[in-house]
Amino acid sequence: MKLTNNTIFITGGGSGIGRALAEALHQRGNKVIIAGRRAGHLDTVTAANPGMESVVLDVSDPKDIARVTAELIQRFPDLNVLINNAGIMQFDNAASSVDGTMLIDTISTNLYGPIRVTSGLIEHLKTRPDAVIINVSSVLGFVPMAVTAVYCATKAAIHSYTLSQRYTLRDTSVRVLELAPPWVQTELLDSSEEPRAMPLAEFIEETMAVLATDADEILVERAKPLRAVPGPDEFAFVTQFNDALNAG
Image (cartoon, rainbow, N blue to C red):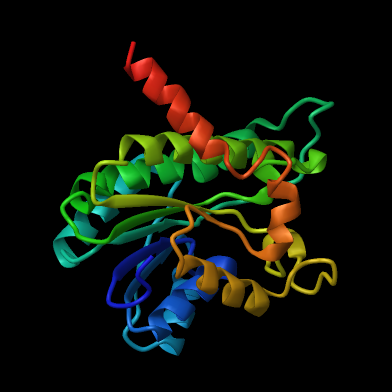
C-alpha cells in the first residue's frame, strides 16, 4: 500500500487502534478523516493532530452511514482509502441465553457497519487510483475466545466477507486488505494496562511496516501463530474455488 498522499477515512478513529493508525498515517502526509460516535473523543484527536478532520458517525445506524458517506464523497473527492475499524467487544455466554441487545449491537457495529460503509463508498473508490479498503478483523476470527463468542463470530464473518470482496474487486483499481490484530493494549475490555497484550505503539510500528508491502493480510508477528491455524494461503484456494465455479 502507498503510505503517503492518500485521503483516508477511518471509522472508530477516536480511540485505540483507530486513533493510533490515524495518527501514524497523518504523520506520513496523508489527509485523514476519522469517525466515531463520541464527538468529544474525536475533538481530542483532531486537536492533537492539526489538519486531521472528523465526522460523527454511528456505524450501527444505516441512515447515519448513508448521510456520512454521501457527505464524504462531496467534501473529499480525492478519498481513496477506507479503513473499517469501528467495533465493540462484550463478554457473553454461548452456553446460556443470549442477551438480545448485546447480540444486535455487536453484529450491527462489527458486521453490518463495515459492509454498509463500504457499500456507500465503493462506487466512488472504483474511480480513484491507488484505492484501498482495509477491513479490521482479529486473530479471534480464526481462533475464537469463547467468552466473547459473538464478537469472534463477527470477526470471522468479516474475514470471510473480505475474501469475497477481494475476489470480486480483483480486476478493479481497489485493493482489499485485512488487518487482523492480536491482543493489543487498548480500552477494549479494559486492556490498556494488560501485560499479556501487545503495546499499542509496538503494534502500530509493525503494522505500518507490513502495510508498506504488497501483503493482502496485515499481520504482526504476534498475530501469526493464531492466523497459521487455518493457513495463510487461504485466499489462493478461495480464488481457485471461485474460478472453477465461474468456469462452469
